Structure formats: structure tokens, C-alpha cells
Image (cartoon, rainbow, N blue to C red; front, side, top):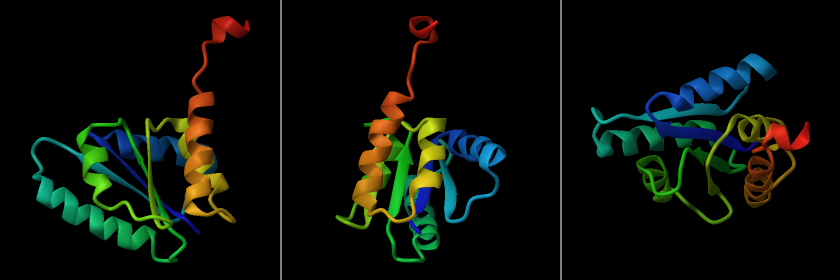
Length: 131
């Protein structure tokens, strides 16, 4: 099973996972990493390595979901990119996280990353246009 790491500024990653698990129940190989000004980058990198080892234990690959391109969570994650093994998708939202949990079996990491990018973008809507 593809592992999933959500890494964001502040505690947003933990809250995304808490909300997702409230909807779908407990999910395996899913972890949060938070970045805070009080934590040094070296500490975050070390913690990220540990988390990636844990969620990637099956060897099926890892998807890293980050809050925004160019931010520290994405920059820290970029050093772990590995073709065919570790992918990053930025702009995480709750629909994207839910889809990552439900669609990660039977896909390659690249296929899942592409699906999540498209799905996350399509999940952004303006209800006034539909009503």
C-alpha cells in the first residue's frame, strides 16, 4: 500500500488527518508532520526521514501532500523526491486527502500523484455557480 505523509505549516496536517479519519475511519500508513518556527529544519528533516520510513515500510512508494508550493513543508519534502518511489502533491485539501486514502491501492506512486493533482483541483468549487 502506498504510504501518505501530510506535511504543513503549524498543526494543519494533524487536523486534516483528524477530519479525514472522522469521515472514513482510521487509516494505515498515514502520518502528519507539522512545521513550526520553534523547530529547526534539521529536526524536521530527521523527523521526516523517520515518518517516511514508517509509512513506506511496504515498499510500494510514498505520496507527500503539502500545503503550498514554495513553502518550507514542500521545500523540506523536495529532498526526499525519488522517481517512482516518492512523489509530492502541493495544495492539499480534504477531498484530496480522502481520495489518497481510498485510491492508493493498485496504483503506482506516479499514477496516484496525477490522480490527486486533478482531483484536488476539481474539488475546488463555487456553489453559487451550481445553484
